[in-house]
Length: 189
Image (cartoon, rainbow, N blue to C red; front, top):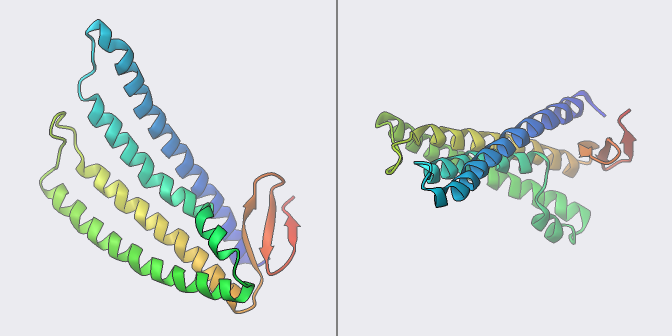
């Protein structure tokens, strides 16, 4: 396994774990506020702006959970479809779809960044709670940038595979081994 693959796997694991933790905490916070609000309402103690907070925390979590899944290569629907193709055809198809996806993500980053910038200029806020939403627009753009990086890494791997090179991919959680595509499985101990 080459140095590129070692660094790729190390940073992919680190960034994915960090994104998973932050997204999980955001979901827990939003859910906790919502549940507390449900239980205290009968006593006339409803929390103000709770729906705004829950919505913003869900948006924050989704912005980070999408690149988290991409970094861990958790896209099972495509795997089911492409898994039926012959190996060579699959590598070429994955490379082409990756390049198309990168173009689409870059357009989304541009449009999202432009939109976030305009909302930042007016300090966009929620209607009911007057909470800032413009910050979460930038979190979404950041999530798209991370998604683009994950797709670029995966596309580079498929191009390398299509060229007949050995590629190490993301870890296997159960035995912490590295799966070498086009080769054998290596233990990471």
